[in-house]
Length: 635
Image (cartoon, rainbow, N blue to C red):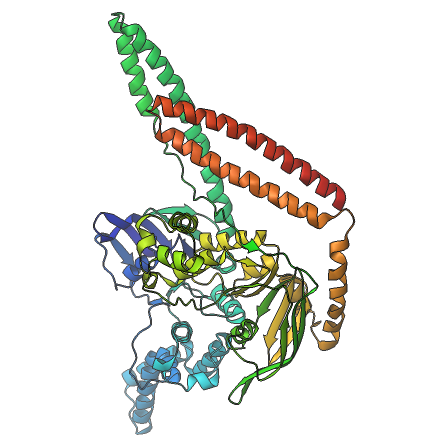
């Protein structure tokens, strides 16, 4: 049975710019489908079309009859006096009406009525009430609230006074309690902490209805979806698997299409050369040869079937780095912080040394961002001391981005803050996909994700050796997340980050600070090692004590025989040189295609390409030599 049928959907908000252009697909009952695509491709617009909030210009959507549909990002308007508890109870409205009718029927029967129709109605309602969970409403409500971190004090607050993230969480709980048939999830994990996200994943595994999810959380997609629909240029591409399958299959399709394109181009060049020769001979007056040339040109046009596949170029920038001297990066002694009667943390003692990559984790509201603000000097602790090493230079990407002059354009913001030339500003902005007229937009017109990207663009120029990131991947699409990850991968300084993105945590954390119950559990190891230790119950104070010996190992690390640290830097530098040369080669190939009608320009470009090919050969040889030396030293 088909739950959602989409046929030929077209939608444009600007004349000539179709955000959806013939979108067609279907979702069967019980399917888990991930809807992917870069920010701005039309995913949220499509979800709003599904719920009837937006109407398409063309096309048709058919939903299965008698099935309830719920969109997480679409928060209904409730009366001003509604508390969170009232909103949650709104999910049980049909059950409450059923209960009222059962009570009325019971009263009539107690008064002596014995009409068979009345008894039949009572039996049917009682069975439906029990099947619908009418006797477990409070139990189910408490279970969902605990899973989604909605504590008792929040349930007493007015719904209108909550933040946007809190409202989203409460609305998700309401829809789950309604037992909706078709769940539309628009970035459901953006406002959930790790524990709540894992709870939601477990719930969706048992959910019997249909799920259509828009998400940039790769772990969530891997766990929840079984099929991927990608929106590309307004149309649908299909992948029969989870996100990991999609990522591999997308690359395979690109390579296959590229091979097909190159094969066609080689054949076309061969035929064009032959056709040109035939035309030269035809000028001697041989009409048959001229017709053969025309026939060959028609054949060439028939071969032109594959467009060159496009692939977004990788970000060719990296964090500026400042040399770090000494062992001490950060020292925290007996740190404490409270707001009113609520203690966020107390008795925090931590030491950070060079080269560590630390994930600061914990539930929403535990105090992670407050601790970051204390480290940055934006908040004062109530007690304790915090000291940074004398050569430490911090780079900071906050969770909530603030610009002092949001009325300025992007290019002016770069000019004022970085004191660079207009061309340098535009080149840097282009590296972060701010191109053309976009650079003249005011900063205030950017989305949250675009503002994060702009702040990151400005941060890249700073010479730093301690990078602090507070939810760096929030509101970013998958491609932008991969850009940040590539930049962080190349960065060799110290890293402290707050994140709920398990892919990001897994990739970078070599140490975990878990903030809960006002204390920090300090674990030296990866996130997966932390989870394994937690599962085995090894995160007691006694078990954590040996990890304090780890700094001794850290100090020994730079003294490995053979100078591997220096050699690693040389290998990384060689890799970057190869990458930069490959980028120049890409630009040169584009220029050659554009100058195909200019013979003199082509000659010059061909000479440049020949020189660059020689340079690339030397760079690759140097990289391979250094890599082999590094492997030998490590061996």
